[in-house]
Image (cartoon, rainbow, N blue to C red; front, side, top):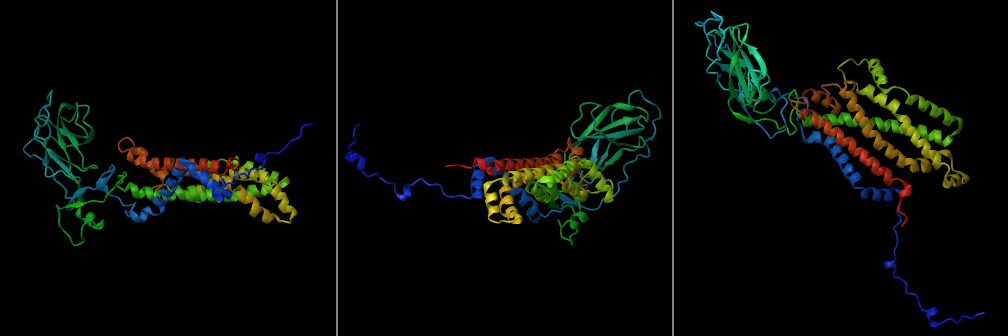
Length: 468
């Protein structure tokens, strides 16, 4: 058997690192570790900032942007987003008698094979958004004239645009247009007719009305001093950074007020039914047995109930007719029918937690049920609860928008993002901003909550905690 003789190398001192050089990992709580994980998720953090921005937009925005969301400005109907505009103050509208030539026949003395186009089509007085007045020379053989308006230059007799009206005789050689005038380029076209057939010849004129506002309206909106009676002066109108809707109401102010309705329903309803689902599913999972079976079968029954039918029944029960806002019935339906999903998730989590060793240890030490639930069960299930809530909020925001869009939720004049989309879809081809802005807010909000929910799912998963 070989003997071993220790050498001096076996007894050399081992160099010990200084305390400051030791590689240690700071002790972190569950929530501290989850927050660090969440901060590493760029999409989730950006989504969190977006949600904070939406909260400020909803709560603080109306105090900074004090435009009345219900104020109608018929001089700025369906205006696109733009910089502040100037308008000329004018007096009240005065009826125009028009121009009728008494020495010219109202009816043609003979019907011609071809009626020439009128000549000398011109604007009488100044063209404003209050009125555009046109006049022209009479045409021999004409029994009247048809007036058209287009937003682009016509290319043929079939491209004259919107028919505004007709004169009553060949001797009536004027027309006044007051139909939804805007400060933009128009092309007016005039066609002669013998009372039966319309001529193939026309004359056109380009007109750009001056933006105006009546003195009384300017006073009522605080744009001029109450004692002022000056007209034909230029003033600055209210600024509409996101344009106006089909009634001239400020889109930004309505989006802020609509956010309060949409986010109230989208956050308050999930908070209520998630809270109920926590206690319902937690009780079923913790106590188990026949109580668990009975509670979950009832939850299955609630899942099978048709949501839209209950909305209709609740609206009838509350006496809410067509065209009236059904916020309360929608809120009640969401709360009564939305909790089973949360209850199932919490039940599954509680079933897993109650079998853990620390729960058995606490029971052996004499811990009561209420202590186990409040100090162990609910805190350890909080991750699932928060993730469920972040996914429930965008789902209910989208539900409110959908119901309001089809006329089952919030109805005008109360704004919500869904009802604004319903109004904007009617003018989406001519004024797309009325649909784009509320739809964009819905999309951004739903996407932000979903991405935050994904980030929370990863951050709160205890199996993914670092083990360094």
